[in-house]
Length: 176
Image 1 (cartoon, rainbow, N blue to C red):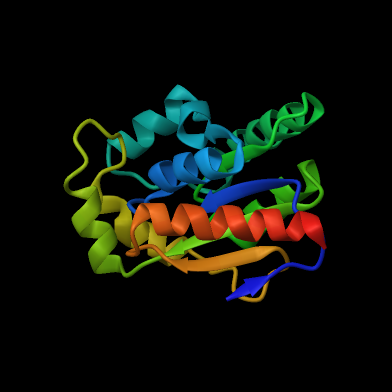
Image 2 (cartoon, rainbow, N blue to C red):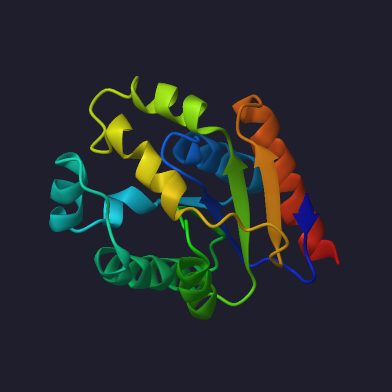
């Protein structure tokens, strides 16, 4: 499903842990000439410690992080770049906060089942997000179905296919 009513200025690759945000974001950036912004790199140490200990983040934990991500995308746009942010953006209020920072923001929602996400998370060496938190991710998730400037894709497709599809969709929005 796709929805785009006007040009997309920047992209957020979103979804639950294990959906492939980082690798898909890199592929989209490669296919579009965009600049990848890895959202996890902006988590404050307290958030990483909390998740590493197996505790899900709450709205308060995410507030400053989301503000920082919005600032990073806005700065990239001012510098003439085409930002591609990886960020779970699980709730509508989180996506709205990012949209306030970056008008014309588009979202690529990487959709997959809880089982696939759990399997993928259990095989990520060195990542701070344990597979035990996948259930909390799905409990928090408010899928962006029907939201403006949103592309929903099956996250089990090949990364190259998703990256090309999303980059083509982004490019087409600019031609409207």
